[in-house]
Image (cartoon, rainbow, N blue to C red; front, side):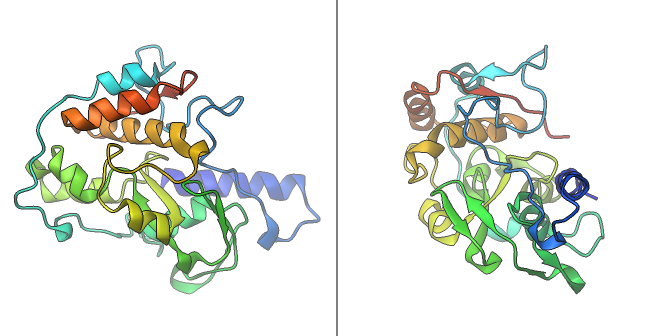
Length: 243
C-alpha cells in the first residue's frame, strides 16, 4: 500500500474516531496542498529531507541547488513513461491513489477502485470539484519537461517510477482539467497557476520535485524561479532523493 494511501487511511480513521456521529461519506481528509506561507505549514514539499538537519532549505537556496543545463527533447515520447500502474496490487492505480489521498471529503470506493462522491480542492485555481472525472492528475514536473531535464537518460523502470511517484506527496496533484491542460508541458518561466495564492506552494512543489529526481533547469527556468520566489520569504523546501 502506498505511503500516500496510508496517510489517507490514517486521516480517515482519526476523523471517524473523533466524529463517530459522522458517516463515512462525510469523513474529512487533510488538505494535502496547503499554502506555502500558511501558518504552521511553511514547508509544503511533502517528504522529509533536503538539508542535513532535516529543517529544509529556503526556497531561493533550494532553487540554486538545481543544476543548470540545456534541455534535450530529441526522442521524447509520452509512452516512454508508463502510467497509471497499480504498484501495490490493491486494485487502485496511481490516479485513484492520488484522488483518495487528496480528497477533502472521502469518496465511496467500489469494485476495481471505482470512486463516487467525494470532493477535492484544486489548488492551482482554488476550485472545489465534486466529480472526480473533472480532475486530472498532474505531474508536478510534466513528463516532457522531466525528459528534457535528465530523464532522457533514464531506464524505462526509472521513468515508470517517476510517472507513478506516490512516495512523495508533491510529485502528483489532483487539479482541474482546465488548469492542467493550460499548463501542458510548460515550466514556471511560461506558466504559473492562475491563483496568485498558489504561487509559492507551486514553486516549492516544482523545486522539491526537480531536486528529488535529480533533474536540471535551463537558464530561463532558473531565472524565472528565482524571480517568482522573491515574495516567498517564508517558504521552505524539503525533499527526499528518489531511490
